Amino acid sequence: MSAPSLLSELEENISRLSLDYQLLLIERVSHRIRENISDKTDDDAQLSKMAADPEIQRELQKN
Image (tube, rainbow, N blue to C red; front, side, top):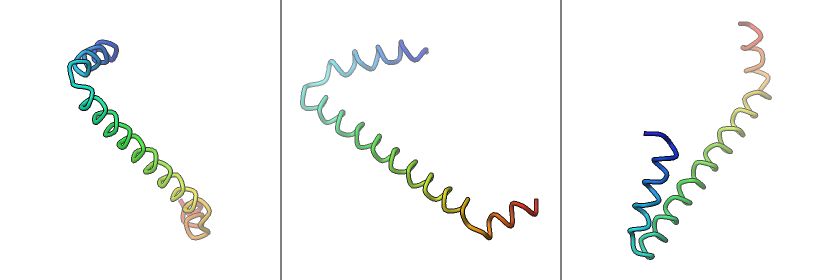
């Protein structure tokens, strides 16, 4: 199934939910997105720390 048709099907199914459940779904999806953004930010910060670590730089130069 293509992404556009999948999105259309999701929208159709969501429209069948009550307003309360639609709001609950939005809250859950937004929470998941915020967690993913936070995880990516944490990963980027750890990679930056590793790249600046002199021991890691020495190890990389050996190879």
